[in-house]
Length: 462
Image 1 (cartoon, helix red, strand yellow):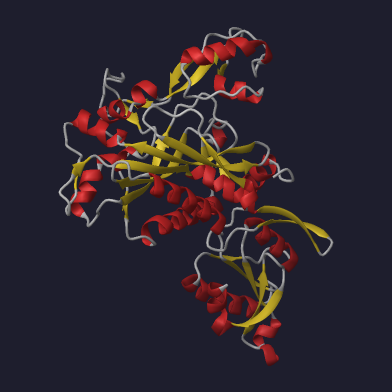
Image 2 (cartoon, rainbow, N blue to C red):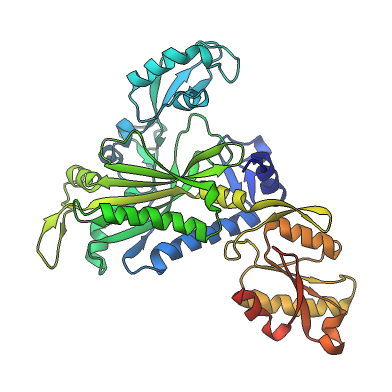
């Protein structure tokens, strides 16, 4: 991705209404972003494609949308109240906090947030002279300590103080799936092996939000949990890894910008963990999606802490056991950023430079733009409005565009990823080509005449 810079992506996102800085009129908030009119369309299309892949196209998956607020004991059971943390050190000169594992990685020293405080302190001490404070440049830091990422809330406490047992915003969305495992088994035809899919909100008290949408304090996660018999995990795990890789390629991500990386340091409950990494502009390869073999940890913990037996009783064999869980988890912001970055191209067309988003048509925020050749000709405008109204009912999101000359319209639609532009001209109204329109294709810039009656079929079939 060396030919595309993250600044190019950020500029396009703001300029064309994909992503805005959160609370921008008040100066903005670190790690917060709002999706604009085009951004929310792209995001919803990505969600729909992911949901179709996991729920609609499969017979062994069930959808879920669990509540954001959960009993505080959920986070005790999951280990988040004690083990969900980032390694932090503070500059003794200006009190700026740094994420120690990431600073070590920048100077080529392998570190991992799963390392113990003592391990990280040892590494940090050996390399402290190479790590300046990002704000003041000093190299004097406190010892590394764990910084818990859960966000507390005083929901229901009108005293204004956080109680000894605070309610937390979810640090990850997947816990709702474990809490509802028994409900899904009891109310659906689900039989092991089967999966549950969810897209849900998560919140993290990040030390240093960074890299645009890559690491934020509020985000959505698309999670699947696939439940299998104990020790019958390996074949399914390999299939899941391949399926997730194949989906990204199918949806338009170039394979050269993806790679699989196995975790060197596993959390204590996992038997294996891999990331699908994407080559983000300016930043390089980093985690896009995690694929984890979580064994029976989650259901066992929630059985223990809740007092509810979450064992599965096999209806055929009568065997009773706690299923093992194979997880996929991806932040929608990271996925959005990967699709936007991978689609961003700078090309030369007819001797001029153009920026074009080569998104798959199913993902594009606008499916087709409709234009009268001239906006000051009532007969062209009236006919274009007819075509516009017809397509809105038949092909999805349609944009009316009569601003500027036709060349400028094409460039604008290229830049937002619109796959097709339909132009109503004087040939549409008379002569041998009456009731035909010009269809212009984004990727090739080629144009052809298509009958109005067959237009929606042409666009839906391509």
